[in-house]
Amino acid sequence: MTSTPMNTTSSAVTLTTPMNTTSSAVALTTSAQNKSTGNREDDEYHTLLAVIYTTVLLIGTTSLSITIHFMKSRTFSTTSVAVVNLIFAHFLFLLTVPFRIYYHVAQEWSLNLSWCKVVSSMVHIHMYISFGIYIVILVTRLMVFYRDSEQLPSSRRIYARVASVMLWMIVLMIVTYIIYFHYGKSSNDTSLQCFRFGREIESPAPRVINYIISTLFIIVAVSLTGLQAYVLCLLYRKHHQCCTSQQDFGAQQKSLTFALVMVVCFIPYHIFRLYYLEHRELENLNEVFLSLTTFNCLDMLVLFRRRACLVCLPGKSI
Image (tube, rainbow, N blue to C red):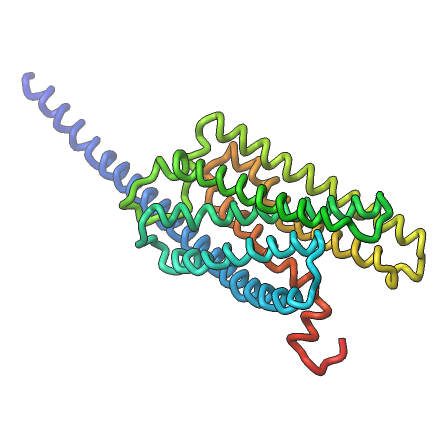
């Protein structure tokens, strides 16, 4: 009678062992599958971003060269001052793009964290500076239209220069403060990853600021684009078939080009940003949307598309 419990216990051990082994095997298989899927997604993410930034670098550099060629023979009006600042913002950003391409090709960051934060911040500085300059150009054009003046007084050029300096100072001071005191504090110097600062928006204050900024971007961009389109409609009704030969219509048409670049390049990112703030697991996709904002480097190529074709294809009738 004493042998029965021992046999029962032995049988229980014998029965449970295969179950534990099977459970462990399933867990290991699932973990391996998840890891394999994650690696595949990361590879696709790095490849896509490398392609996007390479395209921006090549076409952006071409656009910048052609624009500088055109600006040599231009007088410095209020709009020209803004355009020069826009060119400088594109130039500074394009200097950092090779480092982004290197990271996404190598898939690791071998430089220090401080330089990673500088390169990472440049895409935001570029976006904010460009957005501010677009607003200056659009508002100036709208003021010229509603005040029915051909040219702004020369004193306005000084105001334009002062406004440009203030815009650069404000953006650089704010972004520098955020980078130094908050950006990348959750990372460490030995990390091989870069441009991964999603943890910085976990606390309520940064999230609220991001909500406000993205909402302002969307509202301002849509409003100014709508106003600019309305002005073009008024000019078309006034001049009808002769509108294309009118200087005012041409100037407002160029302003609409800036507005459309602002809408196409910036609004998709900020709409997605509002969703991403509640779904931080989409950090890779957020980086892709952020990279699409850099296509505004091609704004001058779109603006001077006809003359750009004449420069690139001399002797061709366009």
